[in-house]
Amino acid sequence: MHTFTACGRTVTVFPAGVPDAPVVFLNTFGDEGQKVFEALAAGGCPPLSLVAVSGLDWDRDMAPWSCPAVFKNAAPFTGGADEYLRLLVGTILPTAEAMLAGAPRWRGIAGYSLAGLFALYALYETDAFSRAASVSGSLWFPGFREFVFSREPLRRPDRLYFSVGDKESKTRNPVLQTVQENTEALCGFYRGKGVCTTFQLNPGGHHEHPAQRTAAGIQWLAIE
Image 1 (cartoon, one colour):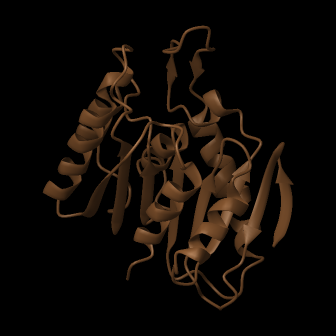
Image 2: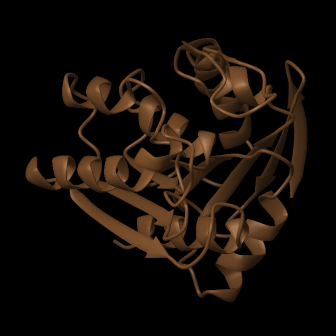
């Protein structure tokens, strides 16, 4: 394991231990990288390197554009995803991959909640990633469904993973109520374009077993 910092973000690199293994970049709300890496090993995931980024300005770095708060007493989203993506691709990615043996066979991006939204958004702003996992992704984000329907990713993805908890849409919040509908609609949209895509409906709400759910998404990306 290796750790470095980049513009206030902490980056932890978990090497696969074999050369030329795939690599997945995981943006985290806290510091869940170790738990996810352990869950991947416990689940028998094929060898891959994991690069976990923490210390994010969550409602800025993961938000594709500015948006009023959708939670009571919460701060608004300030739309800094493009700026953070430049840091991720321009600095974090090459620094982390220099610590790995060989060249990654493929490169993926994954995230939970807002980071799941960001993982999908990144495909439209960079061609650096060929696989993505949006795990309990915040695909309720206003305007995002329409954004995807009206754009083409810069690189056709090889595999896409979507999941949501079966209780996540059971809320009085009219914005959050759309999360399962939007997730299933986006999954169907990519399938219709011939992209290898899967959807997993997990039992429970948004905050249950995030590390295990994230590992399940990454493990599905690792299928050759």
